[in-house]
Image (tube, rainbow, N blue to C red; front, side, top):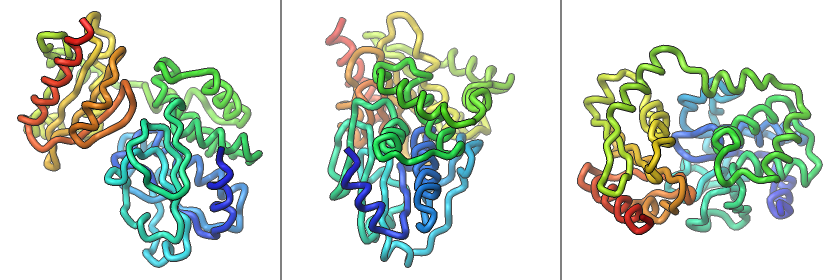
Length: 313
């Protein structure tokens, strides 16, 4: 499956790894995991990871991005990970690289590179990087294995989501052959202090419902600033406060920022991805995101989600 990409990797002495903006655990995990996988198996190569800051996931090993001079791209292979659309890629210098390839697990949106592996049946991009290591007999380091496992955990919802499969567990088992602290992974991902627990309680009280039981939360820019926490903690961090409410099969979290309204869409049954795509976003059938310009557009999206929910009642 990865033959063309491995040909490119072997052909270039400089490799620069990109992923999507505002990284989650899978974006960073696949990026850091691939970086350390290549550094270990091809020590003669220069391997970099670039993009915006790690944010909530800055606890991950080697999560501080590399500083790469523009001139490095002239003879480099750029690898784009965990990204379905070109406008979502962090650091546009990938366009100037000598060669380009992509590995992704989102629903196909557009061709980004001449050489691509896009497998939407995989629960995470980290799973695909693990598959590459297994297929090509590349040895893993503890940092690579830990990073890839972290991404698998986050994008599978602790191995709960529909995309979790037999392959998921086979690949996770392969990673666990390397020595790393599982408890540390889960503590960093899910342990909550009192302030986090109280914040979550505040957002439970903000939940509203449409006529067809779409759950939604709307946070204004003023409310966000008053909370004095990261945007990620609210947008991505609070969306699943609505996940286990009986009778709610679709839910969405709206968060106002200076650059638009972040929309995190989730579903337990219906395919909400086409609605995310309609508003310039993308993702998976049951977990997608988009950014809209104003509250009017956000409410139109909510109307579309409510209509979808009504079609299945």
